[in-house]
Image (cartoon, rainbow, N blue to C red; front, top):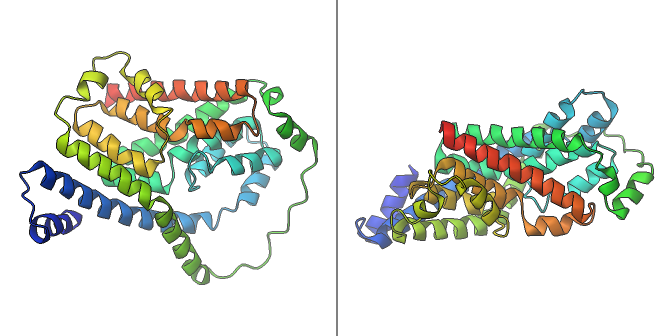
Length: 322
């Protein structure tokens, strides 16, 4: 359906020749734009309904009042997967976790997974790579958060929190408001959920358009083999190079997935491309600046280092099995 709409717009209405580079680029742009924006709204609507039944306060209370024997890392990672935040907008909730007394390792699990796996990332990924790779990517993101939080939780990192964070932790958390009050029915809340989904689309549509436009230009005009020369499968340092190059190139998932799709079509190994995407989305200089509120520079370096290593390992595994 989406391809037919793109055919009509580009080849029939605008009368571009499909054999030209410009026609091919425009078709890629309209096809991916329409498809991905529709998927973002649909999946945002579904995840909004799920989030309506998973209040942050209840998750916080659950993780702090029960002995979970390590399961808290997986639960925090899963919570990160169903929250629609990029790495920078995840920081306030991360601070709330610290304030609520949730173990530091579990907060790291949330912080790692939240920007990597959310409805926007999955919608764009689904539109670009299909459901099988989307499922693999989603599970990998959750696994990275779980293992990363567990590894970081093995160390005594509390002394490396900022003075502000230590002061916050030294104060008792205020009593939580009673959340057991009667809630309106789901159908009465559905318009608000739908409006929130629309707001998510509005918030990311510019990134989607820019990312797809760049991807369309690369798709139509970059010569075959250009990316293979730098990130080819036989290059042992291709995956770590992709991760290191991605850190200063911060973007959210909606803007970077279309580029990853083009990289793969140009011959870049899927694992290298995914490692580049994960580092671009999950490790960024703006995130590091915001984390200075709750962490010292040493703790930020440890967090980035552990996460980067796990992304590199994931990239090598993807290249080996896909």
